[in-house]
Image (cartoon, rainbow, N blue to C red; front, side, top):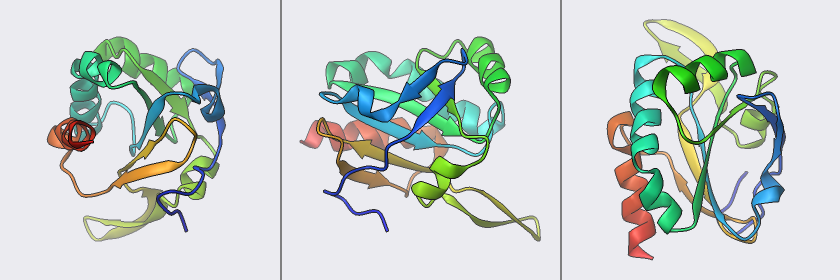
Length: 153
């Protein structure tokens, strides 16, 4: 079980440019790792575009954004280009990182059950420890919840 104050599970995943990105390469910065179900779906687009539009505020608070989904790098490239996203998206095709963060779970939708990503965000501090877990938000105000937390500190 993940606990605030404990080390965040490390990962190395391919980004939208098919370049490997490792979480531990961001030591010294806060990292917002947000897990979302699928690129280019309505809720995920709203969430990503709001983070895109909040990039300057997040950078001013020393925060890097990494979005993770089970999509392929090619789908992430299309999503990034179509929405002019200005942060890194990572492909977790085998959902091993989602499982390490306990966001790969059984979900019910329209009477059907499938395994999928439960939308959750993790703020990782400058030393690589879990600082905060965001799991109660709407896609349209996710960025506001994150910024409110960061500005309270």
